[in-house]
Image (cartoon, rainbow, N blue to C red):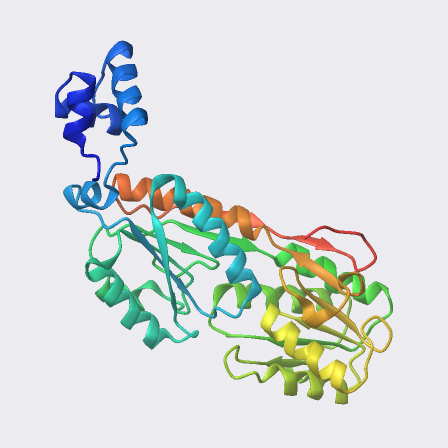
Length: 331
């Protein structure tokens, strides 16, 4: 038979309310009484009913996470870190894949904010908060990560890779590369714009051609990066910069099929947090992002909002680090 809170109260000689205060830390209870209650809990093997407790508080014990692509290795790192942050608070994570579609993002936001979860962490595929504002209840606990949305009234955490990517392109130029191609992803996303700006600034500062002929655009869901890589190789690019991990994998796939060696036939500058299609990472210059730190901070900020719901438009910026290909590194 399941042990109830009434059994604990009877065994410790106190009221049910006192047992509740000891468990939930909602009121001062003397050390002696606390020891009696804790001893009774241990002896009887009592486990509080988290579902019932959350119900009384109007909570579900669930946090939602919207991601644009579950195939990203980086998404896995974020989810793993979030689960570690949420677990001590007895919160569970449910994940929704928007497939980088603003339309699907709106639909899933409507569903999740209708009472399914206590809060949300969002990797948005939109450029402006006004695109999703109508479907978000006022003061609903939310944190946005990965890129800042215009007009966003919620906490936002993102990683700036401008300086690190600039340093990476600069390193390629100093190695003697003059035909450096770039494969970009969604043009309206803030981090995509920043990364492309860094590439263009570096080649401009070293008086290299910065026309659009060496910039190719790939969509993460359509696997067009393979053909972008083909186009840049045909244009005699000796180095390619890729703007995210899914693009990197498609680029490596093209190079592998056509027997082109990274580090010998073509140099590659990408972002850490990928399985790199089986390639040895020391052959690839990388921009290392503090992904797990961002996820940890996002989880903590969301828990704070769930405790005291209040929208706050604070922005936290973390910074990437450039790692040359010959430098040893840990992942």
